[in-house]
Amino acid sequence: MADKSSKAPAKPEGSPRQLGAWDPLSSLRREFDRLFDDFGAISSHRRSGMLSPEPFWRGETGLAQAPAVDIVEHDKSYQVTAELPGMEEKDIDVKFANGVLTIKGEKKEESEEKQKDYYRSERRFGAFQRSFGVPDGVEPDKIEATVKNGVLTVILPKSDEAQKHEKKIEIKKG
Image 1 (cartoon, rainbow, N blue to C red):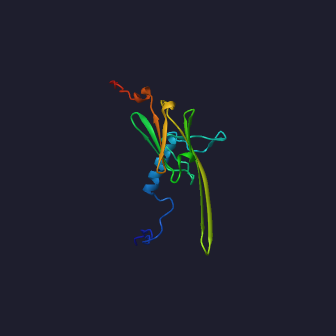
Image 2 (image 1 turned 90 degrees about the horizontal axis):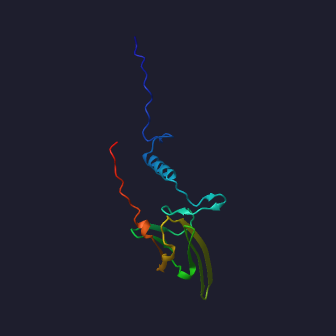
């Protein structure tokens, strides 16, 4: 009897990847996205018809005009640093109300150049606003903001009670 076994055709080298093929980096990214979604991350999406504040630990809005912001927790305070190149304190507004820190600003630039052969006039305007939900335990009366070389720094001191938030939990034998 003749051997009637069949072999699957060989896949030529250099062929494009199959759709739905496992990609470890995409898989890892999806897992991280799911983790943050499960953790209760809220971004500046519309909720109940109003823009909600960003979570304090996650500052992203997806807006091109939104300044880069870093948030760091220290033992006695939170520090918010925003990059605002070319802006001065008169251009920036910082407010804290109902547990929300809001940073607003508007930048206006005008330049004019007159030469023998040409005249150039440029105007640029841009406004931004970012709001962050702040954890309980911040002392509103002691919040300080400074701007130096286009970098805004806001210090939100923690109350004594908030500084003692860590508690050792005894583990019992079950």
